[in-house]
Length: 259
Image 1 (tube, one colour):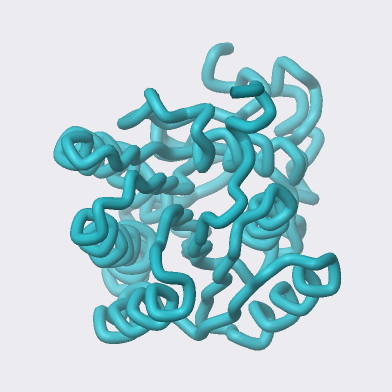
Image 2 (tube, one colour):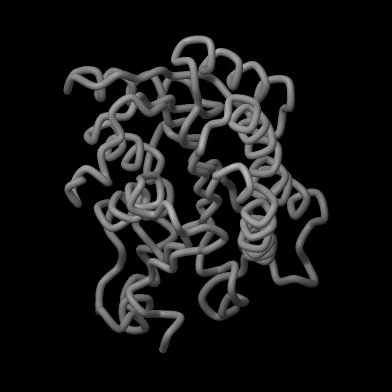
């Protein structure tokens, strides 16, 4: 077996939540480029359709489906539809997420905190459970990847950003990744995460712009992340190259947490 063949995903099927833009779109394109069938899902299905058409224009195979990861019935429906079309689900990337910043912890509205946790943490659990049950039933040695954040390892500097709901949910996701990994290792299913630092996207660039210089100053590599950084990490964890890795969260931050 050649080293490059470890990264070949031909015949594999991947579901990417939050796949209609930004990091989700970039990861979908990366997996498609190495042969995977990709299913991009989000509440804004129109954006997913655009990604699907872009992938198909390059010769890839894709589906676009509407999905609210907090809705158990919708999740089950998506899992069933994907399974019926492709016969298996081999890869899941839990990328759907939201944030509600700008509030100090003492002022954070409870309903906003609950909303962030519901999407980022509960939604990841619901999606992982549904896909994992299908993998177990089929005997699929699947790959599950949870998109966390370096914010899940520490609190935010209040002079730069306030996001206690986001930070808490991502911290929970990192621990949940370990728990799923320990439980599902017996089935050959790996569960890992990626914790990126700031990678500018259409959604985050307005937040980043006013503090970009401050951020870069704290990054040992002296730059922010790029889409290709995320694509490489996702492909690694989705492939046989990472077959002996589980329960881990790759930190993709240019060295921020090490400094």
